[in-house]
Amino acid sequence: MNQFTPKSLETVAAQAKEQYEGLVKAGQEQTVKQFEQTATAAKEQFEKTAAQLLKSYEDLQATGKANVEALIASSTIAAKGAEDLGREVVAYGQSALDKSITTGKALLAAKTLQEVVELQNDFLKSSFDAMLAETSRLQELTSKVTNEALAPLNARVTATVETFSKPIAA
Image (cartoon, rainbow, N blue to C red; front, side, top):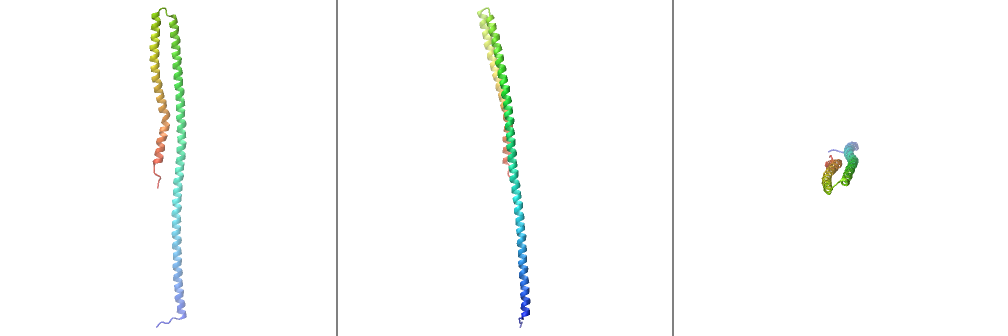
């Protein structure tokens, strides 16, 4: 029969204590390792998300700046077009006035009623034809200016839609 002696009990207790401390130490090391892995993964995910948010903000800021630049370009084109249209209208008005003065002088110098009627008919016909031609030309010029002025804005709308329809990178 085995008898337990105080010495053998001390040895068994020391061995049990050593095994217990080893288990505790291994558990602590494993817990620290898992915590460090979790903290590293969380830090990486936070940095990735922060970078994505910063990129999104920078994209939004760049888009806003480009939109303002497009608006300025569009306004500049429209202003120049309006100036060109104004010049055309003034030139047509001056031409029509000159023609009216010339016809008025010719009417005053006319010798017969027949000559007055012919001058008046020629003036009305040519004035009407000139007005139709000028109206058509002004409509074409207006359409051209409008299309040119809207081009920068259309380009920005397209670019903005493309930028914000892209999914955020995972």
